[in-house]
Length: 426
Image 1 (cartoon, rainbow, N blue to C red):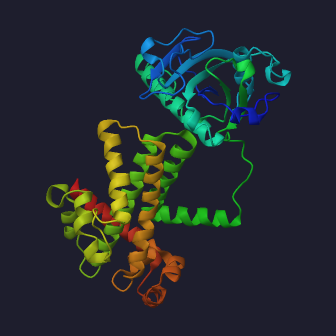
Image 2: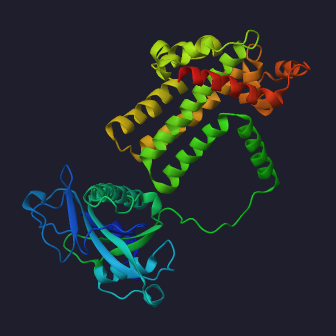
């Protein structure tokens, strides 16, 4: 744990007792708590080395209640500061201003000079870290930071209930950098350790445009989308899920978007197969029966009954595999989010996105084995490159040799058929 001057890093390695860790974060949006307001949360368990010591989250702050002695905690102190509007996404002057006040030492002039014009909320987040959880250093810092930010998320989300028109809830992914400080419970920050921990690099100005290949991809996606392909809409949900997760830290939205992506993939694949099955005797009746909730049940029922007979593979949600992962990591989690307001963790959200991404690959592999039965569906979902990679291209190319087949019209014809199905269901 480094400090710009002293002590040396090795000295921190010799700490025998717990440390108080402080993280300073500049929120992307103002949080409406008063200047220097303090909110603390006691956590389960005890911390060895705190027995008999009077716990204070800040050196000059009030002592925590007697019931808090010896227990882990997170304490937040809100600073409402002014800063220049042009300081950028890292907000280093605001962080340096609070840091200087905490440690009692001036910060470099390049971080503190200039006039100020805008308000910025900086949160001083303090927690205690047991001696046995101090190494490896980077892992210990991230563990403590996450613990603190979980409490900050609770406070900022509940603040919106007290002041409904306040700004959105902050997420760790919206924070570019944090200044951290460490001291022993009986020591001072001036004699402790400090450093800077990068978090999520801020989005910069446009530094690249689409190259020729990317422009070709864009035009291909546009053409398919305008012709009625449902898969561009699915990919759009996947992109939104990743943006909500990686850039905004909106785990609820990321899970919901991932669930939408998976449902579009599943529903569109079954729709295409039903459409291809009725080409010789055009009808919407079979599809209506399958998609009518009152008659055939919902998506979970269709997954159990409609896919395996057509594609083969394992579609049992109780057996290990992509369908099991989708049912538990995506669909069930989405239901908890939507029906109970559950706030998924980082790990749960990451697992949901991974399970959703695995679903189309599972379907493509099965379709490559069923080209003889569903040549159009395989070509529309897997495409020539995928069929060359997964197998089945020879059968698909033979199908395309028939002059009666006009692939350029397939998505348009499918979209019209599916629209008729939806109108009947409505």
